[in-house]
Amino acid sequence: MNGRRVSDQLVETIRDRSDLVSVVSEYLTLKKAGQNFTGLCPFHAEKTPSFSVNPSKQFFHCFGCGVGGDVFQFVMKVEGVAFPEALRRLAGKAGVALPEAGPDERESPARREAAQIYELNEAAAAYFHRNLIERPEGAFCRDYLKGRGITAETIKAFSVGFALPRRDDLLKQLGKQFSRSLLEKAGLTSRREGAQGEEGLFDRFRNRVLFPIRNLQGRVVGFGGRVLDDTQPKYLNTPETPVFTKGKHLFALDRAKGAGINALIIVEGYFDVIAAHQAGIPNAVGTMGTALTQDHLRLIRRISEKVLLIFDPDEAGARAALRTAPLLIEEGISAKVISLPSGEDPDLFIRKEGKAGFLKKLEEGKTPIDFAIFKMTEASALKSVDDKIKVTEEIFPLIERLKNKVEQSHYLKRLSDVLRIEERDLRAEFSSRTRKNKKEVSPSRPAPVAESKLPHDEETIASLLLQSQIDPSALADQLDLEDFTDPQIRGILSHFWNREEGRWFSPNRLNEIEAPLLTLYSRLSVRENRYENVQQTARDYILSLRAKRLRRESSEIESKIKLAERGGDFSLMKSLQQHFLKLRKELSHLTLSH
Ligand SMILES: [Zn+2]
Image (cartoon, rainbow, N blue to C red; front, top):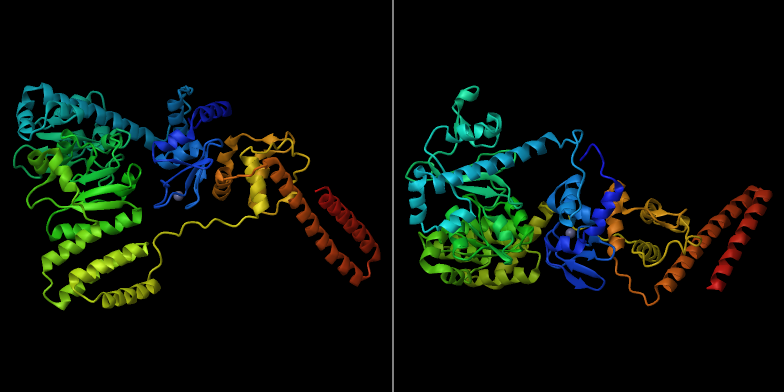
């Protein structure tokens, strides 16, 4: 849709039919607060809501990080897509038909390639699934899954599949429909070392049970395959492709998204996830054998602010907690950690104890820092002073990252208890360390943008105008851009206010303005304006702006008069004095009429 532009009229229609509040509500929980709705910002980590949506203006603004815009900008930012794609998605939701893409409207080559890979992956998933449920060769795999307690419904729900134990089965099947180079790009085939051309290609997945991995939108990005015997490697995943990167996807997140449960349970393996879902725990997602990454957490935050983690019950678990805690703090996700009895994984545990047993176990969750303290002090038995120092060296950096002093204090107390160190001494050690670090490190994340101070009267008028609380046409002859001193407010008014016609330009002009102006525009759009008499307030402020301008101008003229006097230029002096008197008269008239 880049070549031929969708008409402004159509953009307006889609905007009119989209409701920002319901679009935003798909990503976060909004609560009514005054004229606006507020919630936790999806674009920065926060504990108290500074993200506001103005339902009548159809605009959002975050007072914490400064992002803002209309429904198109929201979809672009939250989904990481460009304007045409945001338009397409909103058009789909609003039931507005977009003109078909013509031959001159090619998408970028990268997007086209990704779309082809999704299509190929979908076809491969369907083929593998048929292998498993229909073909005689699939019988062994069916028995294997049955042995692991997986039902036919679950196999269907997850489109579990089977790759035949042949060298080039998939290659032959899908090679008719898709190019070999695409099969290779999608990671469905591998290449014999040193081999050139098509001869060296063979199926990557052979004789394995396969789990399609889907992204948040439900598209197949890759596969995870497990052997049915003792062959190594036990698990084989899709390699890095244009649509799949290790550590960036979570298995079954697309299914957990719609589950409507507010905490996600993070497990490691495919079978752990599947056992949980089958037992009626649809909020389990899998890291597919990797440790939890920052990318994972960013993905999670779009769905939930709470996670439950399952770590090993030994020192490895403590290490995992130490490693993960800073990421969780950084992303503003609250977490609880549990460990299962040694040698058990969630799959086994759920099959043995059932849903109720597993959920009960989850209630034992400790915060990652508590978990790390608990495991470290349990493991080392704390024989010597050195052991204790080692523990503080591991835990202090985590406590330091906490922004909340009460929380910090809680963990320092806990640490002094378990280490049996005087709390006073521990705190002294902690603060000397903190002071040292303050000098050395700079914050990793920029501080939230402070709300810049705008002249109150100018901000009020601009905001009332923008929210259509006052009618610009009625004020056309009173309002003068020159009355405004703030360059940004002037920028917005001159860009959006069609003075000649006494009305606002189309909000489509938003796409033309720079980020700082957009931030201000959205801030003014969600500003709470509670005045008993809006028209009167607006008139008062407009008059006060005009008066200020007259005073400003007359004091400038006064100094010019002094200069002219000193220079002996009496004719200039005289004309300046006339101008000065005119301004003063206007000013007294203004204040009298008021
Ligand atoms: Zn924000």
